[in-house]
Image (cartoon, rainbow, N blue to C red; front, side):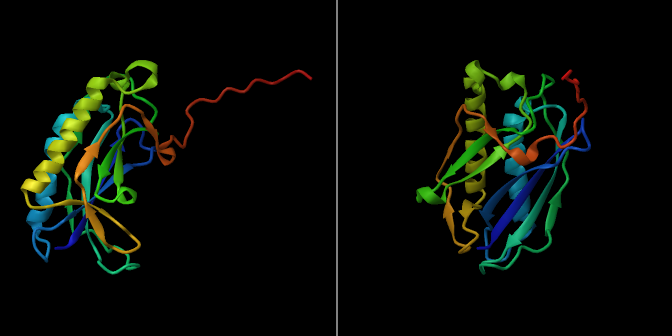
Length: 205
């Protein structure tokens, strides 16, 4: 089996200057040599996942590109060019006020080895997902966890196993459970880089 990297891109339709948010996902191919079906299996499972969570994400967000790469089993060998791209347009479904772009929800991937757990960070949540005291609403946590579970189960059913990869050794651990909690995370690199308003007040000294 080969290790495949799926890189999922999220673009901000309301602000072309904003950085593209990215989540990455590793999984195994069904056979030694990857084929197109290995990539479309991920896309099919991801489409179901998106149906489950899309209503929580801002309608300003377009998830319209997934790039696939084959990861070398040799440590230190860089990943080459993408071998497949999916350009299906997937839009967020929430028209509510958007939270700052650096605010994210983490989906933790549990493996048998605690220090080898992984995670990815979903972007573009709106006030629809806010609960009390700045935490994510309970219903949103359940909705994301259920959709994530369906995604990973669909991958297992398709004979493609989601894994957490060690870049240092190029070995991997199978994802055996997922975890979603009600504390938002901060991904600093997703912050807005251009201001649209700045107020200056001189002081009399």
